[in-house]
Structure formats: C-alpha cells, structure tokens
Length: 239
Image 1 (cartoon, one colour):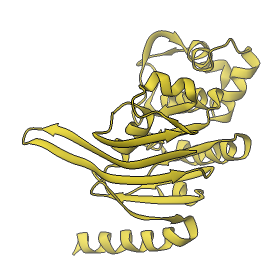
Image 2 (tube, rainbow, N blue to C red; image 1 turned 30 degrees about the horizontal axis):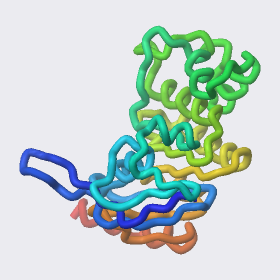
Image 3 (cartoon, one colour; image 1 turned 45 degrees about the horizontal axis):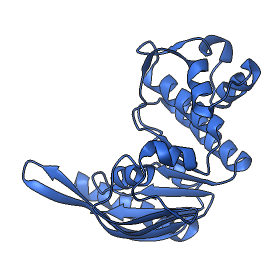
Image 4 (cartoon, one colour; image 1 turned 90 degrees about the horizontal axis):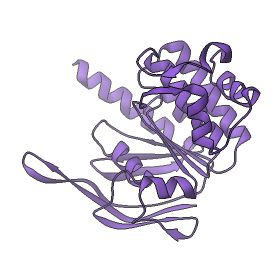
C-alpha cells in the first residue's frame, strides 16, 4: 500500500521557485491505477516523487507501512518500487539479456528472457543479444524496458506515459501487455497517461491539474465526465 501525506514540491525556474505539486494526499492499494490530467499539471513530477527521483519539499510518503520520504530511487527499488521512464535510457555495451538479468538481480535462463520479450511483442531471437543502444527505435526500447519491469515483478510498478514514441501497432500491443500484467502479477500498477484505451482498463482514475487532485474515483465514475470535458475543450480550441 502506498500513501502520500500532504505532498508539495517546489522547483527552480528562471523566475525563482514555482510550486509544481500542492498538498497532495492519496492512498493507493488498487491493482491498476491511472494518473491523468493536462500537460504540465504535475503528473510526471508526482510519479518521480513516488519513485524517489525527486524529493518532496513537504509531506510524507509511506510504502508498506514504512516511511520512505528520505529514501532514494535505489533504496526504493530494493523495497519493491519500479519506474519506467517516458524516454528509456540507452546503455551502450549492454545487451538486452544483460539488462533483464541486471533488473532481476539474478541470471535468468534464455527461455525465461525470451518469454518476457515475447510478452511485449518482440521476437526473442532477434533481440536477446542486441545492445541497448542507438540502433534500437523508441518503440523497441520502450517494449524492452517494459519486459525488464515485468521480469522484476515488484510490489509497485510505475510507468510514465508508456505510449510516448511508439507506433499504433505497438500501442495496441502495449494494452495487451498491461492486461497480462494485471492478470499475472500482484501489487499495484500505476500508469501516467492521457490515452483513453489505457484509462479504460484502470480500476481507478486520478486526475491532477495545476499540481492538485481534482478528481479521484472508480473508472466508471470518472472516465465519462473526463472524456466529455476533453471533447468540449477540443471543440473550444477549434472555434
């Protein structure tokens, strides 16, 4: 279970300090939660605060009953928190097989690694010995990162806009991957996204705007109103 207590975050910019997150409190224990909202509203910042990439200016973070506010990303990873970046990191000289073994902290069999790669729609024979470098496309890299996160099997898995930079076929496959993760693993999947198809498979949707929670509830209670609001905003933009 994850609990945020009165989390705030100030960031430096050219004009001084700006509050990005304001007094956010949440309890998350559902299996699949989507965090959405307008660009610049604070979604990715809040995700990075949970993962330990950013330290909140104020507030407290509790994970499985332990205060992790002062713990860094490595310490949180050891406790069972995984983070999938919007733009995954490339590692020259490291193969896909090496990366997945490093993620799990043990040496998996070739068959096990191939299963994870197949789950994300990659032909294992073509990728297992490839270097995780500039030769891979954004979509390929994204799917390899998701395979790595799946292999870790952590209590809390966070994905920051996993649909970014991938083509339509890959996006359709991505939805299937998340559905498989939902069926197979315990713990919680937290996805930052504004894509309707991802929101539609969530148990709970949290909407953040201007650094604050503006809507929070079950998918069936939030999604229809959210889509209506987006439609209205799109129509206004075209006027």
